[in-house]
Length: 439
Ligand code: DSN
Image 1 (cartoon, rainbow, N blue to C red):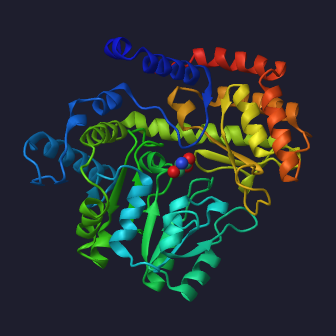
Image 2 (cartoon, rainbow, N blue to C red):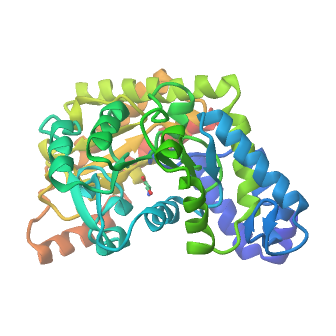
Image 3 (spheres, helix red, strand yellow):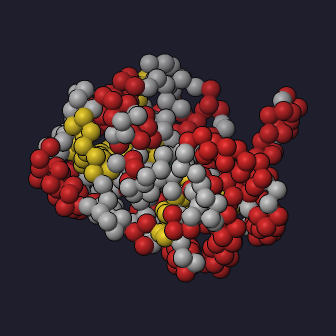
């Protein structure tokens, strides 16, 4: 980055600091992942300068020969990798992609069903604080007492409410999603089935999670999570979707552009094409398998330490942990873990009585540390460190009263940064990280 260093040493230094922070810590937020240098090179390429409103061969500006070629390449690779007949690779990210799907298929106030945010769904699946909950009528479904999607309740609600779209897919759900059952329910009530596979796209490609292709009408995925591409998203239409509505692909295209977006980010499209090529080679399958193996070992080890995993474990890349039995608040735990070099996020747990900013749990996952090459042995060590951190802060008696909570949080933040035990763990974490450099 010699040019950047010369032009803007301030930003250069910030990037270097971030690089160091990332390389010395365990990135365990399940939606984060590291991309290959090839993907990043495409992202920082000449394509970044360009405006290409429209679609290949139907653009509004001249000079599009190679913008067309790269977009077609990304489309063809996506179609082949996921086994779908139609794809739009232009959405800037997951939320705009979901907005485009709703814009294509719904009128204001139409009904959509999605997993409640409080139970692991996404903001754009109908949370009242998002546009999706404001402009549409939301029928949220939940998990059962075991922490598994309550499919019978989904069916009952769908029959009563007759939503136009049923969304399956989540951001904090550690179990296999039964796409077949969702497909049957959607068919029964004549709804479109939208599978939001953003978190698990890479697992689907690696065949460690079933694919929704035979059951969903539309599939949306971000490209930067387990798929290891640049930030971005794709909307796919299945054979089933096209059979239901032959115009579905065209409607999606029109909703993305000119409906909601302007020019596509051609550099992002080029990087998506690269990521799709990388995901189609055999080693990606091994990578996906290892993500799940690592998550399972982590789950077993943490359970041995008495941590309460929602649904009792994991089938995929993530774990959701309720810390109530350890008398630790999720925000407190996430901060303490960060001081120890383990990066997770605070997260609400099902039926959480605490507010989202101070929820009862944490969410963590294995995609990024698996990209660094870590395996089962490292998971055992990480679980041990996590247990030590949680024990160090348990019984902190997080106040229920708002004002007292503010005071507690302020004092905790000041003190925890100097906690000797956590700092010692962070040194051990760093040593481990050195053995698994970011490539
Ligand atoms: N923010 C993402 C996640 O962390 O799961 C979802 O958009």
